[in-house]
Amino acid sequence: MRDLGVIDNGAMLVEDGRISKIGTPQEIEPLAGGSIIDAGNCVVMPGFVDAHTHPVFASNRANEFEQRSQGATYAEIAAAGGGIRSTVRKTRAASEEALHSATAKYIHWFLASGTTTIEAKSGYGLTPADEYKLLRVIRDIQPIRAVPTFLGAHEIPDEFRNNRGEYVKLVIEEMLPKVANEKLAEFCDIFCEPGIFGIEDSRRILSTARQLGLGLRMHADQLSKSGAAELAAELNAKTADHLEHTDANGIAALKAARVQPVLLPGSVYALGSKLYPNARTMIDAGLAVVLATDFNPGSSPTPSMPMILSLASTQMKMAPAEAITAATINAAYSLGRGDEIGSLEPGKRADFVIHDCQDFREIPYFFGVQHARAVFINGQSVL
Image 1: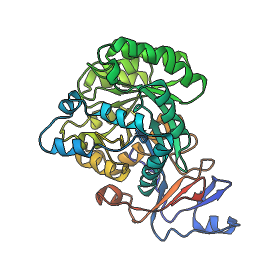
Image 2: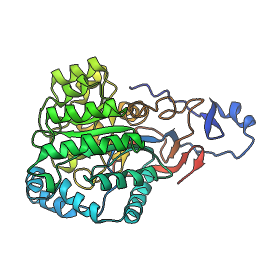
Image 3: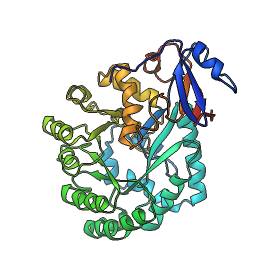
Image 4: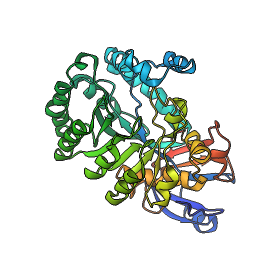
């Protein structure tokens, strides 16, 4: 993860939206039949691949941010009717057009951070009609590539608070079949946590999703050590995300099953916690660690991958090169797209960013700065 394959004074030939050749300017410029872009001694990198986001929602939860600043915990706010359920109520009331408009603003924020691909989850509808509405909005996201994930099992909605089993049945018998049959999502995710969706409910929902042909992702061991990492390994999930409370046994299980950890330090930071996932142990065990923003209105309202790289280096002791690998090629593989994006190689999509710096380590070093000077997707300028 520390070998980025940096080419000093490099050049890249782009044809028909793909990278056709990498080399020196002397080798590449004579082949350029069209325009030549001089990056001006800046860093050129693959676009960030943000493999865990919740970008479609109505309004925000700035009031809860203020409450947490005054000492309220995330769990206390949720128990009082806030948290995810608060966003669900607002999102249900929003029109599809309004959600398109709000999401477009957030997508511009991602682009400005140098992100060219996101994994995008539903999960703020929690009724069949509203979940499909969110997935339709995700389907229409542009110009960023958006990989859709169904997260109907994000929380127990208000109307099922006293009947979790019926909601689980609704997800399994109605939502999942339609999502799979109409190809509204590539993955199914679940918030596996005691008091929300426990191990057995998670096993039932994810097993059904797998039978229907969906890939599996999991919110695992975020708020407690629940055995979710081991369940992700048992079910051969593509990823296990969060993992703040995962221990050595969970890490060993993920390694044995080749499940990629998706670490989300932005949510730890935003919630005022000090318990970051054990990235060093995971990397040393040989796991292909991924970093993502967890962009959402409650626990991680940031689309900035450079900020996540900074947190990874300062709080989880990942080397800058490791963090960049985790946010590009490793993330691409976690979405099943490692052969298309995530690195600048011949044959791959020409998704790249010109960063206004001369050393890749400056990206996490100057934190809170958006370094992207220009962003290209399929070889076309989008920022």
